[in-house]
Length: 591
Image (spheres, one colour):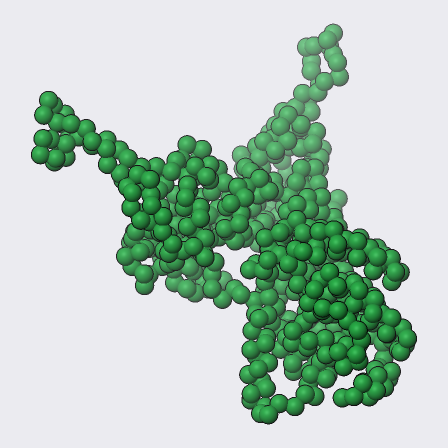
């Protein structure tokens, strides 16, 4: 289409009202508002960027599981995760029935339903740049003037982001959804900014992030001088329209080429990562779920939600007995010699035969022996057609560099199969690609932010937070609301890493049902846990419990009046006196 015809067609285009378009605008704004509440922005990484970019793609697939997974993997506050999912689900419920005004053509729709992950991108190696980008989004969300927006963006881009490897297509989509009248969408290879090229707008290297704001100013200038519409998405829709009008020699060839282009945008989760860590507060089901994850890895299938845990555990036990699964726990005293290989003394006779009895004709020699991990690696190497899983419970409690040694390099996916010479046996050793490493980490013991950097780079982290929705009613008490209220206060007075897991309120039959069970849980688990979190600060514990002298009794001393300094004494209340109203009172003020 000629330039004059494109301009003429654009002049007749109606402006786009963001909240009536396709849901991307309100979804991204909601997410940025949630991130603005974060106090610990140092936790933000590529998983948060995955979520924000996913929201910019819109509502076309209506994939709630994918949305829930990305929100769950993010580092938002757990209360905001629930709120964000609920809000976006409402937005998507409209979009799934195409109630918004924009109807995508087949090329655009194919593109929009294929999100990606930035896990393998250069930007993933620079979390500080991702954190700075989120700060930039938060800052821009409060501005409206085009000049201020562009000047602020230019300044912040030049500071830490421009050389970070952040793709232009991702940054521009996110900024566009935040401020649609100022920031255009650029850098998407499938459209190649076709509309702007056909219009002859003098843009500099579109793929160069340092040129993005310059290009924004040129497009803004062109739009203001030729058109009445404000929303930059009008240009993007025109690009898709022009792309659809391009003639290919053969329709099949055209579709194959489109599929090839779209392949770069596929979400790469088809192959499970070799190294994963399940992390979260206590009682969130990390050890419980590691059984299911291990079976899924070995059998290469997704376990159905309705499959009984007893059946899964039986399968897990079978693989453990056969040696395909090896379970170990890290602790402060564990060493390289126990995990990889070491040497131990052996008594031999004059002929070199091992003996258990030492006498004048025997001597002591030292032989290398295999540790837990090396033994499993050697077994996996001999059976390349099978899959093996090494489960490391409490992986953050060990001294990583002391335990792994040179293996910290060999466990990387790109280094699997590479070999090193081990110090004791002086033999070649490698970690085979059919061995998965699955770890668990309790964030209440040690923050993920403090975790060994070498380990963080080599593992995929799967956050497991409390799921109050799994709980029901217990003796007239709504456990879902109770746990939500407890965790919201713990997060406010302490942090999200010390939340209380739903598993404390569950047994082999599911959610606990009676008040007696609830009293037992509180007296033996919940209150002792709070005493550990808020050591010697019973007033803070009473705030968390919204307590009116039932769970924690405040006592006035009787025999020390003459030395009275106003100090209070605290005692654990009698569990038999805790009634339904005491438990309901924990969440009564949040309803």
